[in-house]
Length: 399
Ligand code: AMP
Image (cartoon, rainbow, N blue to C red):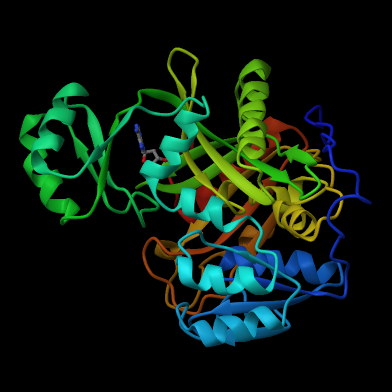
């Protein structure tokens, strides 16, 4: 494939920079979900030990890790014990509170930094820093009162989305405003929380770039994923994206610029809108591997999870070259019947289809249970295999 991108060297020579954390060391991951699980798979393959910190036993990451600390996330004694057992801490969700982060940071390097977490935990801070550093974002306004919401909604032509500034994901805590009559209900839905009103973007497509940066300053971006959502949850990612090279280069440059501006140490996902007039706008950042980068596990020389291991350990980054075109399809709990995914054996009748299940015992509607990566000999072949898999699963076809 033509999407190989050189790893951009950093400015700090290894000898003068941070000593790498070598295989054999224990890596700590805060959070027990599927992102921690795939990090643990990648780390253990490279000979690291992994300790997971999770607030519930029997977690997807805990199934793979060498060791598990099960305690509430705000139990600072447990966090300190965890910190003393590991060489470096990373995380698989960004809503980690300040106190445990401080406790961890006193004991071990925390990568990405607590500052990046702080910035990305809250949409106003995130968009504020992006805008201040000159990156293009959706138009937004802070909402602290109903009066302000009324004025802001009018300013955006009553075509906007009200979101909770903190703790929102997968469309949770969002209300669409289509006219003045929607303002009252949107305000009520906010429930007194700090809000952010965004002008609705008339996008032609949603895309994302995963970027990694090591403590030495080396950077690498993954190929652009073209993302399709259903009910605000990622449904499928298509790689290579069906977009012209110029847009894809620009998206990767944007992600690199953000990684450098934030002095990232680790992996960061940059979600973008491509507007109908060809402009890229940043929608959201996630300072960790991302669902839209799952394709890399099977389709790239180095997966986003291996890259996270390399970056947080201060090792050289791996090639992000795409080996095969692919379509990633999310498997949500809606597809399950009891404890089973019906037709799973038949799905595997396609030898270019890779199945990932996260070991979650209970399926619920909307819950991410696993994903498929449909590889292809060329983009049309990957598309056809994905179409066949979706038909078998009873999912609507992609366009
Ligand atoms: P978010 O949680 O902000 O990533 O939003 C979830 C999804 O809602 C996005 O992937 C978009 O499909 C849609 N969305 C969010 N913000 C906007 C916006 N300003 N304009 C148009 N669609 C949006």
